Length: 241
Ligand SMILES: [Zn+2]
Image 1 (cartoon, rainbow, N blue to C red):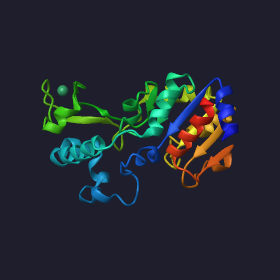
Image 2 (image 1 turned 90 degrees about the horizontal axis):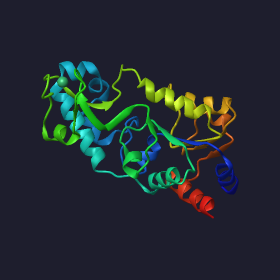
Image 3 (image 1 turned 90 degrees about the vertical axis):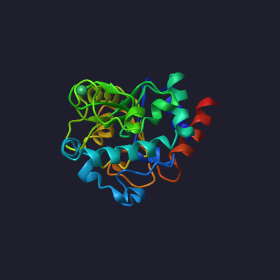
Image 4 (image 1 turned 45 degrees about the vertical axis):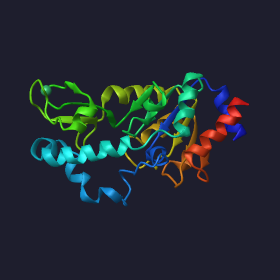
């Protein structure tokens, strides 16, 4: 831990990459876990796509109202707040995330690249006019301007990842000296290419995840005996010392 703190203190660019494990520590159920619990009544494979938005809007809306309520029931944890403090203090350069819950923004981070979009924003699928997410929860399902269906700002199945965000994340990764993965199994492509890209450009790669990941052979440090939150709080004490 002391070594990692030393690396970060002396790094000109440290980049954080977060996955589902970051959010599940807030209590939020994992979208990809086999045990989807409350999700039993919905089938995301059938609903999280543009076809459902256009042809099965009622169920699409029910599903995403459910998802949004779920997200709003949970909050960032101390690990998120540690990362926000680190951004403010110039210890990290930015966060690349696979998460769509917006917790990094809620905690106070500004430089966040949300590879799969975000539930913070809702908009009209046709004319892109933004709608406050509270309106969607209250039952506004169509655009006041063009009557198009309202959708969350997340990437639906079959859609491209947001290109600008992706390029920015790539740029940040290439120039990182320390690259830290927090709570990602690194199995989803193309998100899992970031640790390799960092490594190829000379970064020290640190992976913090409960389970093994396919990228472990490339990592300089693997931490799997503590939660992401525990890791961040402990590291923060070393960095602040
Ligand atoms: Zn519209």
